[in-house]
Length: 83
Image (cartoon, rainbow, N blue to C red; front, top):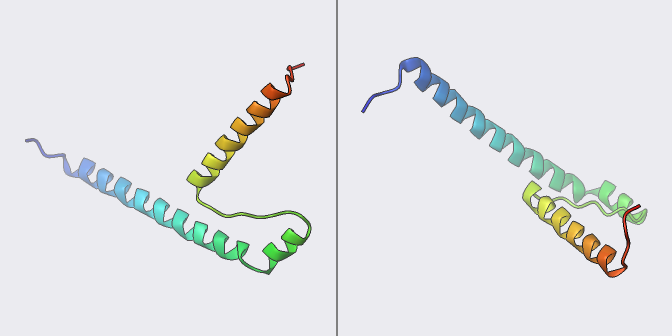
């Protein structure tokens, strides 16, 4: 089995470190957003009928997908044609 040259091993290590750093930064940001949404500003927004919600990007993607499917069903049921 051939080993990678030292330069490529170092590049691979740096890539792995960068991926871990990005994942860690994303987790920290999500935690800060969840904390902010649980605070006083969130209550004030709710009083104006704006309901902030914090979740993971994957959960938001699923929400948007489901909402689009619901809208498509409504458009089809109402027989709305594009103009």
